[in-house]
Length: 446
Image (cartoon, rainbow, N blue to C red; front, side, top):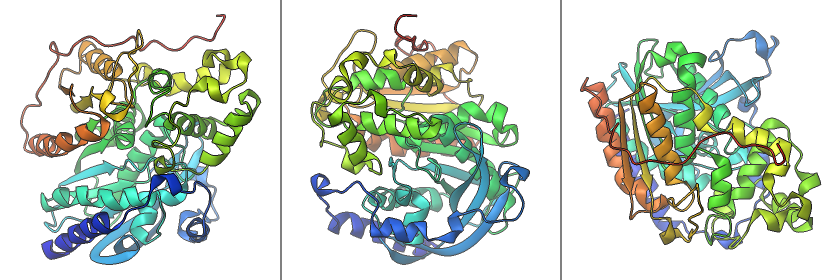
Protein backbone atom coordinates (compact mmCIF):
# COMPACT_ATOMS: atom_id res chain seq x y z
CA UNK A 1 0.00 0.00 0.00
CA UNK A 2 1.38 3.43 -0.96
CA UNK A 3 0.77 6.98 0.21
CA UNK A 4 -1.25 7.57 -2.96
CA UNK A 5 -3.71 4.92 -1.78
CA UNK A 6 -4.02 6.67 1.57
CA UNK A 7 -4.61 9.93 -0.27
CA UNK A 8 -7.36 8.26 -2.28
CA UNK A 9 -8.98 7.11 0.94
CA UNK A 10 -8.93 10.66 2.30
CA UNK A 11 -10.44 12.01 -0.91
CA UNK A 12 -13.18 9.38 -0.85
CA UNK A 13 -14.13 10.26 2.72
CA UNK A 14 -14.19 13.99 2.03
CA UNK A 15 -16.42 13.37 -0.98
CA UNK A 16 -18.81 11.29 1.10
CA UNK A 17 -19.01 13.99 3.77
CA UNK A 18 -19.60 16.66 1.14
CA UNK A 19 -22.38 14.96 -0.78
CA UNK A 20 -24.14 12.91 1.91
CA UNK A 21 -26.88 14.62 3.88
CA UNK A 22 -29.54 12.58 5.68
CA UNK A 23 -31.95 14.55 7.88
CA UNK A 24 -31.83 12.95 11.32
CA UNK A 25 -35.52 13.49 11.82
CA UNK A 26 -36.31 11.07 8.99
CA UNK A 27 -33.92 8.35 10.19
CA UNK A 28 -35.49 4.98 10.92
CA UNK A 29 -34.27 3.07 13.94
CA UNK A 30 -35.14 -0.50 12.98
CA UNK A 31 -33.50 -3.45 11.28
CA UNK A 32 -33.26 -2.70 7.55
CA UNK A 33 -32.48 -4.54 4.34
CA UNK A 34 -28.86 -3.54 4.88
CA UNK A 35 -29.07 -5.04 8.36
CA UNK A 36 -30.37 -8.31 6.95
CA UNK A 37 -27.52 -8.38 4.44
CA UNK A 38 -25.00 -7.66 7.18
CA UNK A 39 -26.48 -10.40 9.35
CA UNK A 40 -26.02 -12.88 6.54
CA UNK A 41 -22.25 -12.31 6.48
CA UNK A 42 -20.97 -15.58 7.92
CA UNK A 43 -17.63 -14.00 8.82
CA UNK A 44 -19.17 -12.60 11.99
CA UNK A 45 -20.30 -15.96 13.31
CA UNK A 46 -18.04 -18.39 15.11
CA UNK A 47 -18.84 -21.76 13.58
CA UNK A 48 -15.86 -23.84 14.66
CA UNK A 49 -16.18 -27.30 16.17
CA UNK A 50 -14.30 -26.50 19.40
CA UNK A 51 -16.20 -24.60 22.11
CA UNK A 52 -15.54 -20.86 22.00
CA UNK A 53 -14.52 -21.04 25.66
CA UNK A 54 -11.64 -23.35 24.72
CA UNK A 55 -9.85 -20.45 23.03
CA UNK A 56 -7.85 -17.84 24.91
CA UNK A 57 -8.88 -14.18 24.74
CA UNK A 58 -7.35 -12.68 21.63
CA UNK A 59 -7.11 -15.97 19.72
CA UNK A 60 -7.96 -15.52 16.05
CA UNK A 61 -10.95 -17.48 14.79
CA UNK A 62 -11.20 -16.16 11.22
CA UNK A 63 -9.28 -13.84 8.93
CA UNK A 64 -10.01 -12.06 5.68
CA UNK A 65 -8.45 -9.31 3.60
CA UNK A 66 -10.57 -6.87 1.62
CA UNK A 67 -10.64 -3.41 0.10
CA UNK A 68 -11.38 -0.58 2.51
CA UNK A 69 -14.82 0.78 1.53
CA UNK A 70 -16.23 4.24 2.01
CA UNK A 71 -20.02 4.38 1.68
CA UNK A 72 -19.93 1.05 -0.10
CA UNK A 73 -17.29 2.17 -2.59
CA UNK A 74 -13.98 0.24 -2.55
CA UNK A 75 -10.74 2.23 -2.26
CA UNK A 76 -7.19 1.10 -3.08
CA UNK A 77 -6.48 0.69 0.65
CA UNK A 78 -6.52 -2.86 1.97
CA UNK A 79 -7.80 -3.90 5.38
CA UNK A 80 -7.38 -7.13 7.29
CA UNK A 81 -10.36 -8.21 9.38
CA UNK A 82 -10.25 -10.71 12.21
CA UNK A 83 -12.87 -12.59 14.17
CA UNK A 84 -11.36 -13.20 17.60
CA UNK A 85 -12.22 -14.59 21.03
CA UNK A 86 -13.08 -12.07 23.72
CA UNK A 87 -15.60 -11.69 26.57
CA UNK A 88 -18.82 -9.73 26.96
CA UNK A 89 -19.83 -7.40 29.81
CA UNK A 90 -20.61 -10.37 32.05
CA UNK A 91 -17.34 -12.15 31.35
CA UNK A 92 -18.87 -14.76 29.06
CA UNK A 93 -16.94 -15.95 25.99
CA UNK A 94 -17.88 -14.04 22.86
CA UNK A 95 -16.50 -13.35 19.39
CA UNK A 96 -15.38 -9.87 18.36
CA UNK A 97 -14.36 -8.32 15.07
CA UNK A 98 -11.58 -5.87 14.33
CA UNK A 99 -10.08 -4.26 11.23
CA UNK A 100 -6.40 -3.45 10.71
CA UNK A 101 -4.92 -1.08 8.14
CA UNK A 102 -1.15 -1.18 7.63
CA UNK A 103 0.85 1.98 7.37
CA UNK A 104 2.64 2.61 4.07
CA UNK A 105 5.88 2.86 6.07
CA UNK A 106 5.98 -0.90 6.70
CA UNK A 107 7.11 -0.24 10.28
CA UNK A 108 5.97 -3.01 12.63
CA UNK A 109 7.27 -1.33 15.78
CA UNK A 110 4.29 0.95 16.44
CA UNK A 111 0.53 0.91 16.16
CA UNK A 112 -2.50 2.91 17.27
CA UNK A 113 -5.72 1.26 18.34
CA UNK A 114 -8.37 3.75 17.26
CA UNK A 115 -11.77 3.34 18.94
CA UNK A 116 -14.69 4.66 16.91
CA UNK A 117 -17.54 6.84 18.22
CA UNK A 118 -20.09 5.01 16.07
CA UNK A 119 -22.46 5.02 19.10
CA UNK A 120 -25.23 2.70 18.00
CA UNK A 121 -27.52 -0.06 19.22
CA UNK A 122 -27.45 -1.64 15.76
CA UNK A 123 -24.60 -4.06 14.95
CA UNK A 124 -24.79 -3.10 11.27
CA UNK A 125 -23.38 0.33 12.13
CA UNK A 126 -20.03 -1.06 13.32
CA UNK A 127 -16.75 0.12 11.75
CA UNK A 128 -15.92 -3.33 10.38
CA UNK A 129 -19.18 -3.51 8.44
CA UNK A 130 -18.67 -0.03 7.00
CA UNK A 131 -15.13 -0.96 6.00
CA UNK A 132 -16.40 -4.19 4.39
CA UNK A 133 -18.87 -2.23 2.26
CA UNK A 134 -22.13 -2.43 4.20
CA UNK A 135 -24.03 0.84 3.89
CA UNK A 136 -26.21 1.85 6.84
CA UNK A 137 -27.41 5.18 8.15
CA UNK A 138 -25.59 4.88 11.45
CA UNK A 139 -22.55 3.59 9.59
CA UNK A 140 -22.09 7.04 8.07
CA UNK A 141 -20.31 7.95 11.30
CA UNK A 142 -17.75 5.18 10.87
CA UNK A 143 -17.33 6.17 7.20
CA UNK A 144 -16.69 9.79 8.16
CA UNK A 145 -14.24 8.81 10.88
CA UNK A 146 -12.04 7.17 8.28
CA UNK A 147 -10.62 10.61 7.64
CA UNK A 148 -9.13 10.59 11.16
CA UNK A 149 -7.14 7.48 10.30
CA UNK A 150 -5.23 9.16 7.48
CA UNK A 151 -2.86 11.23 9.67
CA UNK A 152 -2.11 8.15 11.77
CA UNK A 153 -1.27 6.04 8.72
CA UNK A 154 0.87 8.77 7.18
CA UNK A 155 2.71 9.16 10.51
CA UNK A 156 3.79 5.53 10.20
CA UNK A 157 1.32 3.82 12.53
CA UNK A 158 -0.46 0.60 11.77
CA UNK A 159 -4.07 1.24 12.80
CA UNK A 160 -6.35 -1.20 14.61
CA UNK A 161 -10.09 -0.41 14.56
CA UNK A 162 -12.15 -2.69 16.83
CA UNK A 163 -15.92 -3.04 16.87
CA UNK A 164 -15.68 -1.97 20.48
CA UNK A 165 -19.39 -2.33 21.32
CA UNK A 166 -19.36 -6.04 20.52
CA UNK A 167 -21.56 -7.93 18.11
CA UNK A 168 -24.76 -7.13 20.01
CA UNK A 169 -23.95 -3.40 19.98
CA UNK A 170 -24.07 -3.02 23.77
CA UNK A 171 -23.98 0.77 23.65
CA UNK A 172 -22.34 2.46 26.67
CA UNK A 173 -21.35 -0.86 28.34
CA UNK A 174 -17.82 0.32 29.13
CA UNK A 175 -16.22 -2.87 30.49
CA UNK A 176 -17.22 -4.76 27.34
CA UNK A 177 -15.80 -1.95 25.22
CA UNK A 178 -12.54 -2.37 27.11
CA UNK A 179 -12.16 -6.14 26.74
CA UNK A 180 -13.11 -5.98 23.05
CA UNK A 181 -10.42 -3.35 22.53
CA UNK A 182 -7.68 -5.20 24.40
CA UNK A 183 -8.41 -8.55 22.77
CA UNK A 184 -8.49 -6.83 19.38
CA UNK A 185 -4.91 -5.67 19.98
CA UNK A 186 -3.97 -9.19 21.05
CA UNK A 187 -5.53 -10.68 17.92
CA UNK A 188 -3.84 -8.20 15.59
CA UNK A 189 -0.49 -8.90 17.27
CA UNK A 190 -0.84 -12.65 16.66
CA UNK A 191 -1.68 -12.42 12.96
CA UNK A 192 0.64 -12.14 9.98
CA UNK A 193 -0.02 -9.36 7.51
CA UNK A 194 -1.33 -6.86 10.07
CA UNK A 195 1.92 -5.00 10.67
CA UNK A 196 1.78 -5.89 14.38
CA UNK A 197 3.81 -8.41 16.36
CA UNK A 198 4.04 -9.40 20.01
CA UNK A 199 6.61 -6.63 20.42
CA UNK A 200 4.74 -3.80 18.70
CA UNK A 201 4.25 -0.81 20.98
CA UNK A 202 0.69 0.48 21.03
CA UNK A 203 -1.15 3.70 21.80
CA UNK A 204 -4.93 3.92 22.16
CA UNK A 205 -7.08 6.84 21.08
CA UNK A 206 -10.75 7.69 20.86
CA UNK A 207 -13.27 10.46 21.33
CA UNK A 208 -16.72 10.30 22.95
CA UNK A 209 -17.93 6.70 22.52
CA UNK A 210 -14.36 5.93 21.43
CA UNK A 211 -13.14 7.44 24.69
CA UNK A 212 -15.31 4.99 26.62
CA UNK A 213 -13.52 2.11 24.91
CA UNK A 214 -10.09 3.70 25.18
CA UNK A 215 -10.38 4.50 28.86
CA UNK A 216 -11.92 1.21 29.97
CA UNK A 217 -9.19 -0.63 28.02
CA UNK A 218 -6.53 1.43 29.78
CA UNK A 219 -8.11 0.75 33.17
CA UNK A 220 -8.58 -2.99 32.59
CA UNK A 221 -5.25 -3.62 30.87
CA UNK A 222 -3.06 -4.14 33.98
CA UNK A 223 -5.28 -6.97 35.27
CA UNK A 224 -7.10 -8.28 32.19
CA UNK A 225 -4.31 -7.98 29.59
CA UNK A 226 -0.90 -7.41 31.22
CA UNK A 227 0.72 -8.61 27.99
CA UNK A 228 -0.85 -5.65 26.20
CA UNK A 229 -0.38 -3.24 29.09
CA UNK A 230 3.40 -3.64 29.06
CA UNK A 231 3.39 -2.47 25.41
CA UNK A 232 1.06 0.51 25.94
CA UNK A 233 2.79 3.85 25.49
CA UNK A 234 -0.35 5.73 26.49
CA UNK A 235 -3.99 6.61 25.82
CA UNK A 236 -5.45 9.82 24.35
CA UNK A 237 -9.13 10.59 24.65
CA UNK A 238 -11.75 13.32 24.84
CA UNK A 239 -15.39 13.70 25.83
CA UNK A 240 -15.39 10.86 28.36
CA UNK A 241 -18.37 9.16 30.04
CA UNK A 242 -17.36 8.56 33.68
CA UNK A 243 -20.47 8.10 35.85
CA UNK A 244 -23.61 7.25 33.80
CA UNK A 245 -25.95 8.03 36.71
CA UNK A 246 -24.71 11.62 36.65
CA UNK A 247 -25.03 11.87 32.87
CA UNK A 248 -28.65 10.72 33.01
CA UNK A 249 -29.46 13.67 35.30
CA UNK A 250 -27.23 16.10 33.39
CA UNK A 251 -28.86 15.63 29.96
CA UNK A 252 -32.39 15.28 31.35
CA UNK A 253 -34.70 17.73 29.57
CA UNK A 254 -32.00 18.96 27.19
CA UNK A 255 -32.80 19.92 23.61
CA UNK A 256 -30.17 17.89 21.72
CA UNK A 257 -28.75 15.10 23.89
CA UNK A 258 -31.78 13.92 25.90
CA UNK A 259 -32.42 11.00 23.51
CA UNK A 260 -29.06 9.46 24.37
CA UNK A 261 -30.38 8.56 27.84
CA UNK A 262 -32.77 5.81 26.68
CA UNK A 263 -30.07 4.57 24.28
CA UNK A 264 -27.65 4.13 27.19
CA UNK A 265 -30.29 2.40 29.31
CA UNK A 266 -31.11 0.02 26.46
CA UNK A 267 -27.41 -0.73 26.00
CA UNK A 268 -26.87 -1.45 29.69
CA UNK A 269 -30.01 -3.60 29.79
CA UNK A 270 -28.79 -5.60 26.81
CA UNK A 271 -25.30 -6.04 28.27
CA UNK A 272 -26.50 -7.18 31.70
CA UNK A 273 -29.73 -8.98 30.75
CA UNK A 274 -32.04 -6.50 32.47
CA UNK A 275 -35.71 -6.14 31.52
CA UNK A 276 -36.77 -2.54 32.07
CA UNK A 277 -40.25 -3.08 30.63
CA UNK A 278 -41.99 -3.41 34.03
CA UNK A 279 -40.80 0.08 34.97
CA UNK A 280 -41.79 1.91 31.76
CA UNK A 281 -45.04 3.69 31.07
CA UNK A 282 -46.65 3.48 27.62
CA UNK A 283 -44.63 6.41 26.29
CA UNK A 284 -41.39 4.95 27.64
CA UNK A 285 -42.16 1.66 25.93
CA UNK A 286 -42.66 3.52 22.65
CA UNK A 287 -39.32 5.31 23.00
CA UNK A 288 -37.45 2.12 23.90
CA UNK A 289 -39.03 0.25 21.00
CA UNK A 290 -38.17 3.00 18.54
CA UNK A 291 -34.54 3.16 19.68
CA UNK A 292 -34.00 -0.57 20.15
CA UNK A 293 -31.80 -0.69 17.03
CA UNK A 294 -31.13 3.03 16.87
CA UNK A 295 -27.98 4.96 16.13
CA UNK A 296 -27.10 8.22 17.82
CA UNK A 297 -28.36 9.76 14.58
CA UNK A 298 -31.82 8.59 15.62
CA UNK A 299 -31.52 10.24 19.03
CA UNK A 300 -29.85 13.63 18.60
CA UNK A 301 -32.33 16.53 18.79
CA UNK A 302 -35.28 14.17 18.28
CA UNK A 303 -36.40 14.00 21.92
CA UNK A 304 -36.13 17.59 23.19
CA UNK A 305 -37.18 17.89 26.80
CA UNK A 306 -37.16 14.13 27.41
CA UNK A 307 -36.69 13.13 31.04
CA UNK A 308 -36.56 9.87 32.98
CA UNK A 309 -39.87 10.72 34.65
CA UNK A 310 -41.61 11.03 31.30
CA UNK A 311 -40.68 7.41 30.44
CA UNK A 312 -41.40 5.54 33.69
CA UNK A 313 -44.35 4.74 35.90
CA UNK A 314 -44.85 7.22 38.78
CA UNK A 315 -43.51 4.86 41.46
CA UNK A 316 -40.17 4.70 39.63
CA UNK A 317 -39.65 8.45 39.26
CA UNK A 318 -36.39 8.01 41.18
CA UNK A 319 -34.19 5.72 39.07
CA UNK A 320 -32.42 4.54 42.22
CA UNK A 321 -35.67 2.87 43.26
CA UNK A 322 -34.82 0.20 40.67
CA UNK A 323 -32.10 -2.11 42.08
CA UNK A 324 -31.11 -3.38 38.63
CA UNK A 325 -30.50 0.21 37.48
CA UNK A 326 -28.28 0.95 40.46
CA UNK A 327 -26.33 -2.27 39.91
CA UNK A 328 -25.78 -1.51 36.22
CA UNK A 329 -24.66 2.12 36.57
CA UNK A 330 -22.27 1.18 39.38
CA UNK A 331 -20.67 -1.43 37.12
CA UNK A 332 -20.23 1.28 34.47
CA UNK A 333 -18.77 3.91 36.81
CA UNK A 334 -15.11 4.47 35.96
CA UNK A 335 -14.59 5.95 39.41
CA UNK A 336 -14.77 2.40 40.80
CA UNK A 337 -12.50 0.87 38.16
CA UNK A 338 -8.78 0.30 38.50
CA UNK A 339 -6.24 3.03 37.79
CA UNK A 340 -4.41 2.84 34.44
CA UNK A 341 -0.65 2.52 34.66
CA UNK A 342 -0.06 3.97 31.18
CA UNK A 343 0.18 7.76 30.78
CA UNK A 344 -2.91 9.54 29.52
CA UNK A 345 -4.12 12.67 27.75
CA UNK A 346 -7.72 13.64 28.56
CA UNK A 347 -9.60 16.55 26.98
CA UNK A 348 -13.04 17.70 28.10
CA UNK A 349 -15.37 20.49 27.00
CA UNK A 350 -17.45 22.54 29.42
CA UNK A 351 -19.53 24.70 27.07
CA UNK A 352 -22.55 22.43 26.81
CA UNK A 353 -24.98 25.35 26.73
CA UNK A 354 -24.02 25.67 23.05
CA UNK A 355 -25.60 22.27 22.44
CA UNK A 356 -28.72 22.94 24.46
CA UNK A 357 -27.82 21.40 27.83
CA UNK A 358 -28.45 24.07 30.42
CA UNK A 359 -28.50 22.05 33.64
CA UNK A 360 -26.13 22.87 36.48
CA UNK A 361 -27.34 20.52 39.20
CA UNK A 362 -25.62 20.34 42.61
CA UNK A 363 -23.03 17.58 42.64
CA UNK A 364 -23.01 17.39 38.86
CA UNK A 365 -22.44 20.87 37.46
CA UNK A 366 -21.86 21.68 33.83
CA UNK A 367 -20.36 19.71 30.97
CA UNK A 368 -19.97 19.64 27.23
CA UNK A 369 -23.63 18.96 26.52
CA UNK A 370 -23.57 15.22 27.16
CA UNK A 371 -20.49 14.47 29.30
CA UNK A 372 -20.04 15.87 32.81
CA UNK A 373 -16.86 17.93 33.16
CA UNK A 374 -16.73 17.61 36.95
CA UNK A 375 -16.75 13.82 36.68
CA UNK A 376 -13.80 13.86 34.28
CA UNK A 377 -11.84 16.24 36.51
CA UNK A 378 -12.54 14.03 39.53
CA UNK A 379 -11.32 10.94 37.70
CA UNK A 380 -8.11 12.63 36.57
CA UNK A 381 -7.44 13.84 40.13
CA UNK A 382 -8.16 10.36 41.46
CA UNK A 383 -5.48 8.94 39.16
CA UNK A 384 -3.00 11.55 40.31
CA UNK A 385 -3.74 10.70 43.95
CA UNK A 386 -3.32 6.97 43.28
CA UNK A 387 0.13 7.35 41.76
CA UNK A 388 -0.38 7.80 38.01
CA UNK A 389 1.00 11.32 37.82
CA UNK A 390 1.48 11.24 34.03
CA UNK A 391 -1.97 12.64 33.26
CA UNK A 392 -2.29 15.55 30.85
CA UNK A 393 -5.69 17.21 31.29
CA UNK A 394 -7.29 20.00 29.27
CA UNK A 395 -10.71 21.53 29.89
CA UNK A 396 -12.16 23.74 27.16
CA UNK A 397 -14.63 25.97 28.96
CA UNK A 398 -16.08 27.56 25.83
CA UNK A 399 -16.37 24.40 23.71
CA UNK A 400 -19.16 21.84 23.57
CA UNK A 401 -18.91 18.09 22.93
CA UNK A 402 -18.69 18.39 19.15
CA UNK A 403 -16.51 21.47 19.33
CA UNK A 404 -13.91 19.97 21.65
CA UNK A 405 -13.19 17.20 19.14
CA UNK A 406 -11.61 19.79 16.82
CA UNK A 407 -8.66 20.77 19.02
CA UNK A 408 -8.48 17.32 20.63
CA UNK A 409 -7.54 15.45 17.44
CA UNK A 410 -4.28 17.27 16.55
CA UNK A 411 -3.20 17.55 20.18
CA UNK A 412 -3.82 13.83 20.63
CA UNK A 413 -1.71 13.01 17.57
CA UNK A 414 1.15 15.18 18.83
CA UNK A 415 0.90 13.63 22.29
CA UNK A 416 0.99 10.11 20.80
CA UNK A 417 3.99 11.01 18.62
CA UNK A 418 5.85 12.19 21.72
CA UNK A 419 5.13 8.94 23.56
CA UNK A 420 6.61 6.85 20.75
CA UNK A 421 9.56 9.25 20.62
CA UNK A 422 10.31 8.44 24.25
CA UNK A 423 9.64 11.91 25.63
CA UNK A 424 8.63 12.28 29.27
CA UNK A 425 4.82 12.37 29.51
CA UNK A 426 3.51 15.77 30.63
CA UNK A 427 1.53 16.00 33.86
CA UNK A 428 -1.17 18.37 35.07
CA UNK A 429 -1.42 16.71 38.47
CA UNK A 430 -1.71 19.42 41.11
CA UNK A 431 -3.35 21.82 38.65
CA UNK A 432 -6.63 20.02 37.90
CA UNK A 433 -9.65 21.76 39.50
CA UNK A 434 -11.83 19.84 41.93
CA UNK A 435 -14.60 17.68 40.53
CA UNK A 436 -17.59 15.66 41.68
CA UNK A 437 -17.94 12.70 44.00
CA UNK A 438 -17.71 9.47 42.02
CA UNK A 439 -19.08 7.33 44.85
CA UNK A 440 -21.32 4.43 43.80
CA UNK A 441 -25.07 5.01 43.64
CA UNK A 442 -27.12 3.84 46.61
CA UNK A 443 -30.57 2.26 46.18
CA UNK A 444 -33.47 4.35 47.46
CA UNK A 445 -34.27 3.50 51.04
CA UNK A 446 -30.85 2.01 51.81
